[in-house]
Amino acid sequence: MIDAAHHLPLVYKLARDTHRRCPSFDFDDLVSAGAIGLCEAAKRYRSRDGSTFATFAWWRINGAMVDWMRKTGPYRRADVEAVRQGEQFTGKFVSGDLDDFASKTIPPEETIGLARDVASVQARVAALPEKERRLLCLMYGPEEMNLEEAGRVLGMNKSWACRLRARAFAEIRAAS
Image 1 (cartoon, rainbow, N blue to C red):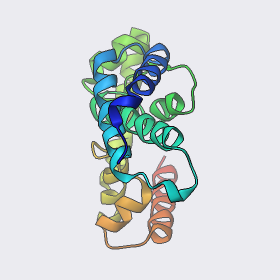
Image 2: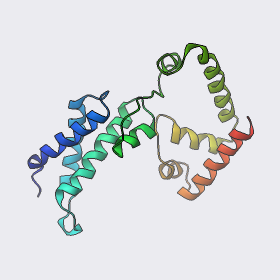
Image 3: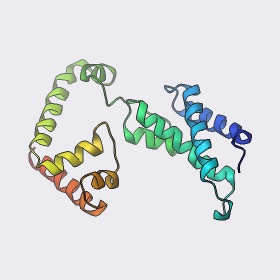
């Protein structure tokens, strides 16, 4: 059995690195998420797989922090993935009140156009067939499921879900 406490400095190092790239998240919360990832790594590690525990734990800790950021933050999936890849966080909001979003990122004179664009896209999505609409809601809504997970919920494999998503996007574009 692995002594997880021995590897806590790795959690602090990864939390520091992540906090440096994404300072809007609390350092202590990142450490907590990382500690959960470390415990998970200690449970799942098998030395016969060929990697050292530190390497195995690094991926689990980093993944736990990114998952926590994705679940608790109002940020785009692409921003969280950029942090996972080591890039600097851009800090663009995507959830919450439209007025709040617009006031932080868009000049006031463009806010009206944005509201019209959002309403137009919402109307196009609402006009989609049920399965396509549900797939997009599962992937881009609060659940933020990946293609495979969303397909599983709808009773289809990843390949069919991908085709359905492509068809939905084509219908949305054609309506514009």
